[in-house]
Length: 85
Image (cartoon, rainbow, N blue to C red; front, side, top):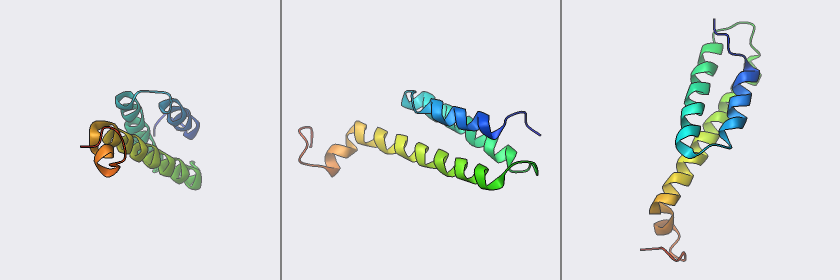
């Protein structure tokens, strides 16, 4: 059993919102591992754990999409932008 609680995971998820992409991904990956470990704990509220996992997955997608946009893919997808190829 892990010492991490759902509250800890939620705090880390909120904290990741204020971090740079690489650091946020690292925090979110650790939080995902914690959530997976909590999935085997019968005392954990499974609905809340699943909701946090969904939020975490959404946050990771947002960061990856933002990085793709910032790296120039966004310009190719939005040719009206000044830096479009």
